[in-house]
Length: 341
Image 1: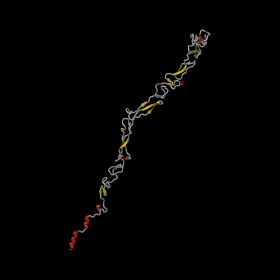
Image 2 (image 1 turned 180 degrees about the vertical axis):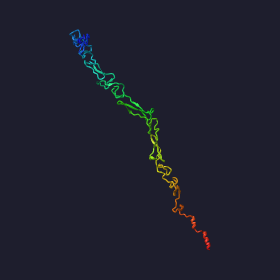
Image 3 (image 1 turned 90 degrees about the vertical axis):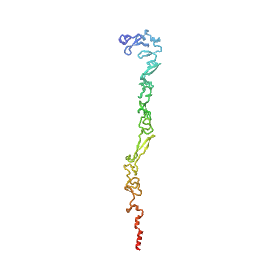
Image 4 (image 1 turned 30 degrees about the horizontal axis):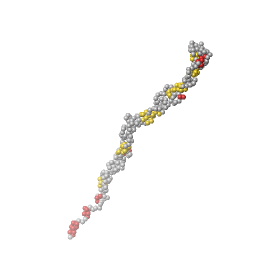
């Protein structure tokens, strides 16, 4: 047998039912329901009926397809009855509904449509390219439209952060920062402020609740480097007051040396410009003034005369003893007169 007849269709003794015929169009016999097409599909009675010679008697009698159904080609030389609401016959025979990527085609009221497969979405609103977006879960910051709502990285909460010491946030100048999602990663949109060394600026820089506390005094000195802390020279001090440094202790820099038992010019020597042994203004001690007298060995003394005599004799006075020696004693004269007589 050729296995191509109703008694041996595709296999020996594989008999088709009364309303079936052996279809060998695919190369192998397959039992199929006899379509009502007015043809002799099985080589016997037309449409498999008993009324040989009549054409589509069931169609003619109105019983070939149900009410509202249309006989359409099944693509294999036969026909099927359709309400024209399937994806193969949607609205008309042979109108096949096509679907895009990750879509499920459908036919509703004779019009083709499609819906997305599970876990896929039509994020761009264009069904022509199918359901291109794979739903992976809630939106995260990764540059992907995870929830497939058509917007990438939307509705992602900001991330507050603070790396300062516990108890310092929102104290003084300290405050937390904020990171925001941008192009798939979190970036700092508001920098944080953490404790720093306290400075003199009327601010609580170290965030301990006090302004300008523990600010170190500032030492300053404008004299020559090798004179600081030598003799009278010393640095000054500035302290933080009201947000700025003010001088609370004045500096002392080198000055002209004076006779005061101090090292005024800060060279390591005291009163080196003065000779207390010979200086009539500072004779024996600073500020001891000899006036018109000379300073000899640290003692004020009258200056010597030109002839080596006492300077007290230079005023033109005559010593009474000298005058008396050159005068004539009246008593002596009287004695001479008596002798002449």
